[in-house]
Each structure stands twice: as structure tokens, then as C-alpha cells.
Image (tube, rainbow, N blue to C red):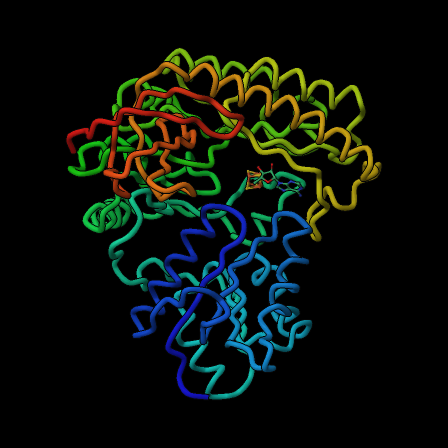
Length: 438
Ligand code: 5AD
Ligand code: SF4
């Protein structure tokens, strides 16, 4: 086989995977390869996988199968991400077409692993969690999207009983203050107007006593950067400094993703969440005092082992009490190796599905109401991509709502003032844009 010239990275799952996928692409570009338009035309395909729920794992194997081409050939295939970490050599055993299996902490070695696989004609597996930081081995960020992700923290020490993350991503590790600022500067130089700081527990970020709010205050001073976001936060790591930042830091967007998972204190305890519903609600109150218009988002799991009908009703109650601007909700999925997978009283699928539907109906109603309440506002929108209709552009409001604007003069990366005129369940429409100064 001649040396591969083009690559395609396909990321599944969370935003941290999107970030890792971008970085793997940059690594391959630094090797002289170029991005292919799709998997079909690429010499190397990286499947950057997610292990958080079961369906995601099945999907990986069907994706690998689908990479076989009509003429019987296939690209080189690397499986990266959390399925790679969790299943290791098993992936290459189950899917013979795989050339490289590389975990989330070892992907800086991707080019070397691909070369080794070609030289030896044998699958290479690297699921180490090396002491050296992969970040130091990655190329400097180049030109990119107006809204950029920046991973500042990885891993989790919380060990919620349903979750694989502590096993696939390892212990909580924060990147250094200066390294993060350097990457932020490079992103802004490359065209980013908005940076979303990422971490499994992003608000646990810490560098010698400096917390996430110190990082946000430093980023606020970065010329050219207009917006700062962060996700995902854990209720127990929500310090006063970060809450105050929502009042004091102009570039920090009024949006907080703060998963509660369940509205039942008994279930929260069984989940090992280390917060209860009362402390969560108090926290939301303090955040809203600091920033009254803040959009609250969350994650929910229905059908955790032993969840009764009455406990599920408590989840609906906390949703009513908080009033979410948007949220993600999932049917519980037993993950191998986690304590909850072997708990008694697993909830039947039909019951879970019915609960999920009711929860999602309520959350959708709240999201629609939140969007409707935004109509009539004039607000900033960061234009991120073209819409489906000619002249239509798509961007995000400060509250992370998608906004469609029809104006052929708009360009990707523009930050514009928009009058919000129509609300839908998942997006808004706006008009009369005026460009904002940088
Ligand atoms: N089953 C269902 N949902 C899960 N999540 C994490 N683990 C599981 C699981 N085993 C959800 C949680 C978490 C989000 C990223 O995924 O709600 O916050
Ligand atoms: Fe998983 Fe819980 Fe850690 Fe979130 S806090 S990553 S849900 S173990």
C-alpha cells in the first residue's frame, strides 16, 4: 500500500470527543496528509468513539463494516475514543479490518501507530494512560471555526455508579493555566470568536489553587475573543467565584449546563451523586441571583435500577421547579464494570421508554417556552454556518439557542445584533442584523 495521503475523522459522543477529533486531524495534517471530504474517499478513517451508552458501541462495529467499499477495498481504520479505551484489543479481534486502536490519552501517538501498522501489517493497540501529557505532543492550533472547543480538564474522580467515564478517561487532571491561555491565543489568532472550555468536570479545573473562574477572568482580557462558555459542570464543584463570574464577566455567556440526573434523593444516593435535590435547587437559585437571565441546562437518566414510579415523578417535579432552557435525557444503560450494572431491580425497557417520553415531553415544552420568551429581544448572534435556504445563516444566541437569519451579506464568524422574531421548539428566527464591533 502506498502511504496514505488523506484522512477523515468521524467523532461520536460528547464535545470532548469533537475536540479530540479535531486534534487528531491536526496531527495527521502535520504529517503532510490532507482532510478528505468524506470517509468514502479517505485513505485513513478515524472513528472517534463514545462508550457512554450501549447503542454507541454497536454503532462502532456497524460503522467499521460500512467502511468496506464496493470494490472490496477499505481505508486504513483507526478506532479511537472511549470504546477503544474500554475494549482495547477486543476491538481488533471482533473487527479484523481495524489497523489501530488508540485510547483518549494516547492519541498523540496516532501517526506513529498508523506507520507501525502499515510496516508490520498488524493491528496496533495503545490504550496507555501515559504520565506525559498528550497535549504537549500536539501541534499548535491553526485556523479553525468561529466557535472553538478547548479541553482544559479531563477525567473524573466522582464515580457515579452508572458511569464509565472514570474508567475510560481516567482520574481528574487539569491542564496548566499558561498552556490553556497559549492555546486560547492560538485559537483566537486562527479565527475563534467564542471558546468553550471543556472538561468532564470542567468546574473542578484547578491549577495550584486557581479555579475555573480565574481562567475565565484571564480569557476575558484576550483581545478578539468575544464569548466564553464552559461545560460540563458538577454541582459539587460549583464555587462562589464561578457564580460571581456570571455576574461580573461580560464575555461569559449566560448559560449553565448543570446535570442533576434525578429528582429523587434516594436515587441520587444510589447513583453516588454526592448532592441532593435541595442543595441542587439552592445552587440554581444562587446562580440565578448572580445572573437572572441565565439559561439552565441539564442531563437526566430515567430508569436507574430500583427507580419507582413515584421516584420518577420526583424527577418531573425538579424539572418543573428548575424550568430548563434545554436538557438531555437518557434511558439508563448498564455499562460493563460499573456498580449499577449489577444492582438489583433493573427497570424494564418498556417502563423506561414510557418515562423517557414523559420527561422529554416536559423538557421540550420548557425549551419551547424559553424560546418563545426570547421573541422580541435584540441580541448578539455568532454566525457559525450556512443554513439550508439560500442566503440563510445559522448562529447561536448568548443562551445557546440556534438562530436563523436570512441575509446574504453575512459571513461565517460575524457577530451580529439580531431582533428575534419567531420561536420554534428547537430554534429561533431573527432579522435586521447590524454588525457589532470586534
Ligand atoms: N446510562 C444512561 N445515561 C448515562 N449517562 C452517563 N452514563 C449513563 C448510563 N450508563 C448520561 C448522564 C451524563 C451524560 C453525559 O450521559 O446523564 O450526564
Ligand atoms: Fe460520569 Fe458522574 Fe463523572 Fe459525570 S460526574 S463523568 S456522570 S462519573
